[in-house]
Image (cartoon, rainbow, N blue to C red; front, side):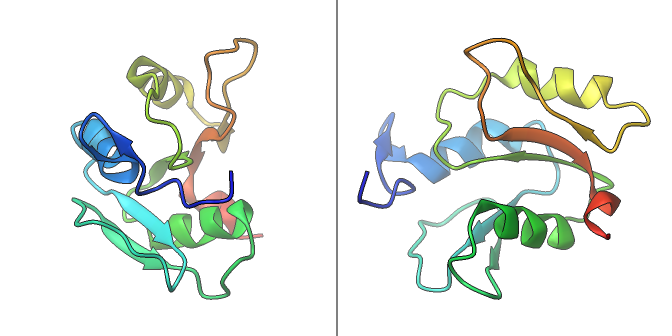
Length: 123
């Protein structure tokens, strides 16, 4: 796309603020991972910086899980303004003893969505 997605407007607010607001009622601990030079609007979330910038989404997931206070986390990319909130609840309710839950099989599921027990990043 060639430009940052986080500040793009969705329903009159920056995309990242829209996503955080939509998820706020479902989660106590909200963590946003940002590059050191990334300019973010005020968010109802903790901001965590990449320790090694520009290492990609996997590194961002690592930093977010490490900072998370809750035992289980829901992870999504910032460019998911139409995230299916029923999907988030469904993943969480079905996680059980699994370390990771990932939706598959339907085109409306976000390709960058997962639910994970936070301990699984320690390998």
